Amino acid sequence: MSSPSLPQPALARRLGTGDAVVVGLGSMIGAGVFAAFGPAARAAGPGLLIGLGIAAVVAYCNATSSARLAARHPQSGGTYVYGRERLGPFWGYLAGWSFVVGKTASCAAMAMTVGAYVWPHYARATGVAAVALLTLLNLRGVQKAAWVTRAIVATTLLVLAFVVAACLTAADADNLQPFPDASVYGVLQSAGLLFFAFAGYARIATLGEEVRDPARTIPRAIPLALGITLVVYTAVAVAALLSVGADVLAYATAPLEAAVRASDWHAAAPVVRVGAAVAALGSLLALILGVSRTTLAMARDGHLPRTLAAVDPVHQVPHHAEVAVGAAVVLLVAVADLRGAIGFSSFGVLVYYAIANASATRLRPDENPPPRAVPAVGLAGCVLLAATLPWRSAVWGAGVLLLGVAVWWVRARRTSHDAS
Image (cartoon, rainbow, N blue to C red; front, side, top):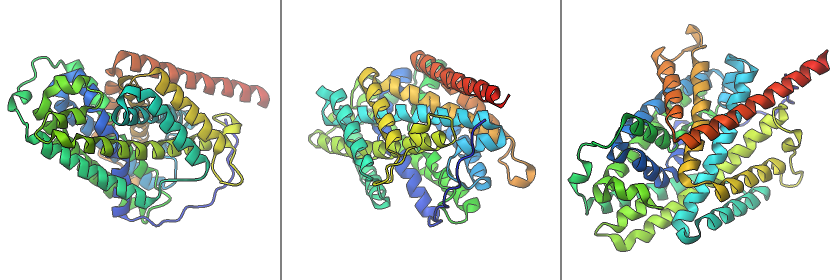
């Protein structure tokens, strides 16, 4: 189907379990927690707590399947590699396409979060400016160093601890009464939207070439990072609901700031703005880097236009891919809303993990496969949550997915014709 890519130098195996957990926390505990609770509350009200639990179960299954696959395929690429090796080239391509599409929408959601917390009256313009600035930094070879990741994680955790403490000063247990208005569909939709905030653990699975003893390190690091994230998200969700209730969260442009403003510590609400901005900018930088590198890999393999594989000879960055990703994110920020961007992102990432779970079912007994129920539940959960996302997100997601299938089909026909 595609011309083989040239051999690439191996990456240094320097990271231990603690380092990998920090990478996972840095990918998960970011801007998603500041943005996703609003759309989830609109879908399910206080029932978003059930949705959070469902999202965590699906995330756990995905994480377990990804960890077992990463142990067998300790190289960069994640499900792009697993799908290709276990299911065939088309499924690897579809996973890569879904990742690029979903994470490009994640970039847009992060940019909108920057705008919502930094300058809400000009949220779109602020988001576009953030994308342009970070793209320019990337083109100059500026990347987020490991110490920056640790600093952002520490700052975000401190801000979230402040949010919980502030919200508890205005806690009203009536806001957590049984959820008569929460339908099953609404709860499932909230789970799909909240899944957006968990999806970063894929970053650990893609560290296969950079961790020591990946067969042990990756399976340990993913559940640890996921468990810590779930505890943090649950504490924040319960505290925010106790403070202002689901109705306020549902329609606030900056949900956690709104929750703190209703507390006895309302004067310190700007602290939340600063924390959200730091987390969102850090997440946005990491996402743009990740999407552009996956785009580079797919272009090298012939799945995307070859020009996207160009590397700047001075700064040694994939400058064409970074400009293309930046332009796509700016377009999404200009035309989409935050709820739509989160839903669209979740759709692409859920398809990506559905392929990961399907790939895990192909692990042989001597390859330490997960318990049979894990990839089955993960696959079913991904399909169900994708189908119950806001209908516009699901329709647009399916349309872009079909576009990717059409691109593959055209290339396959052309390759077959050239071969004959």
